[in-house]
Structures are given as structure tokens and as C-alpha cells.
Length: 360
Image 1 (cartoon, rainbow, N blue to C red):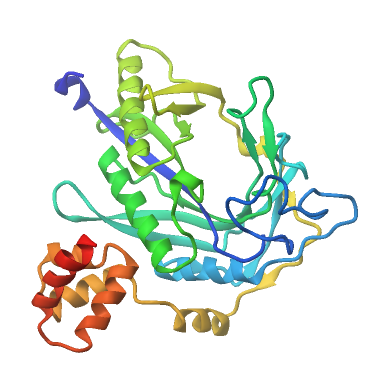
Image 2: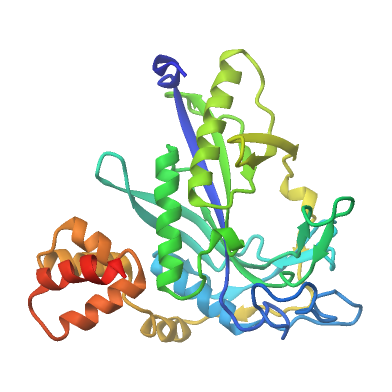
């Protein structure tokens, strides 16, 4: 695309990230929560929504939500209310998901990312809320039929919803990288997008630079890596700008990303909140999250990558590059912490870990 045309438009991006939680059991039942089990083995009458069954809240879900909220500087709601999100799909046996609608557990947080200009940018978080996952429809095993595996149904999720503060595909890449690193540091999600334990939907629109109103939002799904999220956004930006330049109307819709072709494909018109007929979950009482509990969770939190980065650059006089490598994963950071507990030669220790140790 011609740069002069591209520069006429501002891109507005918001991301919705679903993080599957590393709990031993599911969100509202005692079914085992594990990846890779034989299909339809980690299920029960609760997961299947049989009449008369009742959900029981997994307290680890709340603990993990509070952890992430604290790490992102969020406000933690003192009372947790739950709702039913109603829709029909073959892999949703109950016909609804238990979620949080108007009362998310966390609000007003932020994720800080590096930008292409080398400066930091704060991406606001609208909300983080708890919900349960649906099952999985499998389309590529049987030639004629779609198969359904309900092992994933009821798995606890945190949905992390950003403000529309992202302006480029690279910023989206950096944001997702930071979210994944954060949930891994907190040990609440393994962050493996290829296994579906971290999933991302991108909401993308374009508008003339300086326009007061947002353009029509298009949601893109089915991206199984951070790089594919970036590719999907790049394609969608160009597709929308070309359409607007031709005088076409952008449809508010949900599109799927084809990783082989690098294109997005229309799936369906975008649902509105009213389509889901949210109403209060009658089988779960409100749950109080008081300040004492929040402080208990806070006391057990590990050092976060930004804190370690600041420590390594300021106290240990390491370069930004070295500190970035050492805090890239929790395992490397913990190993470095163990080494420097026995030496003050911080630079030599860093070089050894980044060289000899990482090469294994």
C-alpha cells in the first residue's frame, strides 16, 4: 500500500485475551483440569449441565484473578457477582457460560510495553473477569462430521480486555508478549497459544487521522501464535483502508484468520451483548473479596519482570539488553538470582548465563 494513503488513517486496536488457569480442577466442578487427556474423559454431570446439578466456585480462580489484577495495578472489586451468558453451540452443553457481566473482579489496570520509538507506552485495561471455557469442536479428524470434545468445558478462564489504546501490529505483538510473560511469572497460565491455553481476539478499526469517532470495529479470531495475531492485524488494516478508499462500508463482523494464506475470512455478523441475554447466575451467591484476603494474596506473589528489570539495571548496573534477556522468562531470572546470591560479579554472572547456560 502506498505510504501516503496509509498515513491518512489511524488504526485503533483493542485485544481480548483469554488465559486458561493452571488450577487442578475446573471452575465450578471437581472435574480434572488438564490438557491432552483422552476426549470426553474429564467430564461429569456438572460439566454436562444435567438437571439438578449445582456449580461450586473454585477459590483458586479468584486467587489467580486477584494476582493478575495486583500485577496490573487494577482496582479489585470487593464483591463478586456472576452471570449467565446464553447461546447455543454444540460444544456448550449447558447452553450458557458462567461469567461476570457488569461486575468484573478487576478494572482500570494497565500493561506497560516498549514501542518502536524505544519509549514505554501504557495500554489501559478495561477489565479482567472470571469465566468458564466452552468445549472444543474438532473439524479436521473426520471427513464428514465435526467431533466434540468436552474436556475443556468448564475450564477456568480470565478474560483480559484492553482499552482501544493499541495503534500498530507491533504494539499488539509487544502487548501480547508482555501479557504472556506476566501470566507465566505468576504461574497462573502456561501461555501456550498453540495449545489454546492463551487465546486472543483482536478488535480492529481504522479512521481518518484526527477524526473524533472510531471506525466500524471488526473482530478477528482463530490466531494460534503471537506472530499470527500480528499478521492478521496487518492484513485487516490494509483490507479496511482499501475498502474505505473505495467508498465501501465496513461491516461490523467477526472474521477468522487463515494462517496459510495470511488473510481473514468473514465468519458471521458481530454479536451484540443483548444477543447473549445475560442475567444473574441464580446458583452462585456473591463472594466477598476483602482487603485482608487481597493482602494475603499479595504477600505470596513473586517478583515481577518489571521489578527485576529495574533491580538489574539500577542495583547491578547491567545494560537494558542484559536485563531484558535475564527477565525474559521466570526460569532464567530465578537461576540468575540464585547465582548472584553467591557473587557480586553481576556482569560476569549475566554473561555466563546468557552464553554458556542458555546454549544448553
